[in-house]
Image (tube, rainbow, N blue to C red; front, side, top):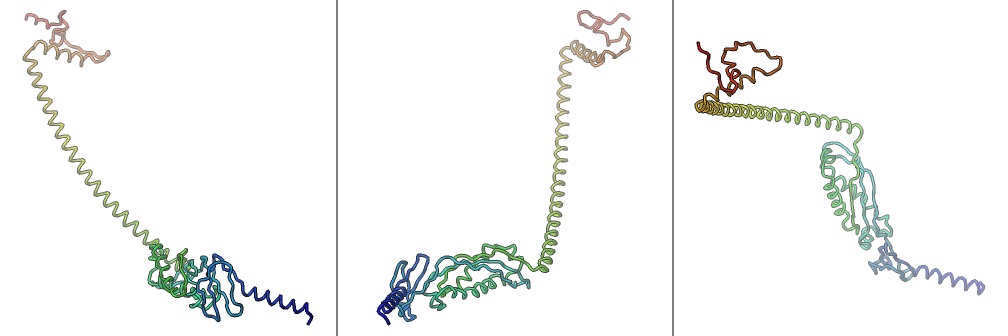
Length: 294
């Protein structure tokens, strides 16, 4: 081997040792340092680091939010099945716990989360009926699902950031039967509301009619009383007026009779001139003419 080849081999060996000795931990990573598969540093800080090649190794996990998004068929407590769309957002919160629980040097170990999610989904929805899921509080369901997944993932070093149901689908044959039943129930409820409304309307209308009749009767009775009192007062006034000046009262009554009799230009009245009706027409001063001698 020539000297040049020896130098080249030494340079390559040094480069290899350097590449195995230097590693970088980014801000997004969680890293642990192993020595013969034993943890010597459970929380390697971000930055440039050195390690002993062939003796030490670093395991890095992406600590950003990751997502599981699937559709599962879940049997329910009322013997129906639904196709549930959901997603779960999670991240590696404790790299050391994740490594000890899975033994994986990458996020392939997160596959252990999938059966936990499926089991939690079934545990959350299976006790319920279809109507409870469709018409229930979806926020409460999401909270229960998230809590169940987090409990199942304890010890894996995983934090569940969010878990939500995004869609609920029914098999075609189940959907048709269920929608028909819902439609029938809604029609029945609408008929009951209409009947109750008609009954209440009739009761209110009867009460209003009774009150209206009572009010009209009371008003009529009050009007008759007032009219009678007015007529009595008018008669009293007329009587007192007539007693004070009989001549003026007779004159006033005659004027009223003239006004009522000669109401239009084409009115014709045929009477004897000697009658009392024309007494005030025969006097120039407006006084009643004396009666002619018999």
